[in-house]
Amino acid sequence: MVNMRKMPIGIQDFETLRTEGYVYVDKTALIYDLVQKGKPYFLSRPRRFGKSLLVTTLEAYFKGRKELFEGLAIAELETEWAEYPVLHFDFNGQNYSDPKGLNMMIDAHLRKWEEHYGIEKQSPSPGLRLADIIEGAYRQSGRNGIVNISSVPKHPKFI
Image 1 (cartoon, rainbow, N blue to C red):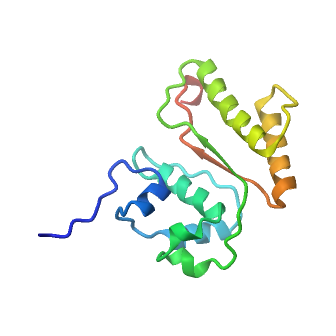
Image 2 (cartoon, helix red, strand yellow; image 1 turned 120 degrees about the vertical axis):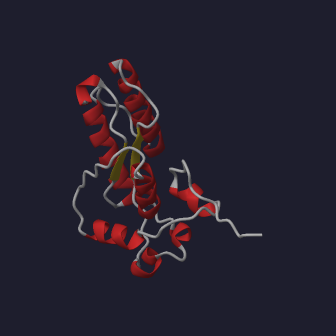
């Protein structure tokens, strides 16, 4: 019998891919280089080209999940494995043709992080709330926060 490896068809989550034995082409040395440059990035790729997988890989890296990277290039490159506050906006699988749906999704993310970091909602403005969350996360952890966004919402204003 041929030893068939599990192919990650439709798998968009790095933790799932690594813990359930799926094939993974190691690009973590490139991720390490990207992170070391220390700039904000906008990474645009066509549909089904691994954007969500990249974002969840970055999330695991910034959360210090060293065990998920065992045997990969980044495990040899990284020496600190520090944990940073990660704010991950995931807009996959939704159609935001109604702005209320988009606002509800953003509000749900913000409420989750306000609760997690014990931050009282001070403003109705999503931008100001996000700034308060980032500041509160920094005060608690002593580290800058990481904001990851999966998929730009599908809304006529964004097209």
